[in-house]
Amino acid sequence: MTPYLAKVLLYPVKSLDGVEVENAKVLASGALQYDREFAIFDEQGRFVNGKRHPKILLLRAQFALLDKTISLQIPGGDSQQTFHLDEERQALEATLSDFFEFSITLRQNSQMGFPDDKNSLGPTVISTATLTEVASWFPGLSVDEMRRRMRANIEISGVPAFWEDQLFSEPGDLVSFRVGDVDFFGVNPCQRCIVPTRDSFLGEAYPNFQKIFATQRQATLPNWVSPTPFKHFYSLSVNTQLPPSSAGKILQIGDEVDILPQQS
Image: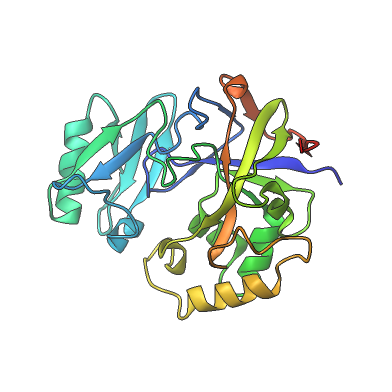
């Protein structure tokens, strides 16, 4: 089969639920429009995210991207509360401050969002087969739950597990590939944080998740993959950069994925 783009997931507010879309526009920075466009901060200017505050995983969020609204389900609440992300931001901040029991602010960056890796602003890439394989390492975890834990933007199908490990090379080398007419540079494997160890709905930790993951990842590493780019094997998905020529282009479900001839 030909590798193709099977899913595009955007996370409009960093650390909250994602939204699956049919297409996504590439910004001048290389980020995808609406992805991590907003983030929650505490009074010290630190991210309020799943790493520091597992309680955030209890929030359910739905987004209407074009309307710029978020519908929040607060644990114990009777119904969803819907807010306009611009016009009702203060009310949203007050609701979130009540939930976290400390004062928060919601900040916006519509040019590049709030990525974890500020050197690789492009979407993260994973394959459906990889998520299926990794979910099989953890009894009781579904493929969709693993998808929610890994929070990648772009999912490729029509390929075997860990196919995307071709999209990075030795440190400092970039791998050129194309999705539809959008050019990418694969940079390195994404080092995972504590968030994937936790249930994406309840925030509860899966026992020995990181140890099991790293052991299995190393054992299943394809023989054509160099271990050099891995600082550790608790790593999954690929960080990317996009050249200026990709700005304004659209990623569309069904787009074919091609690894381009690499310049020596």
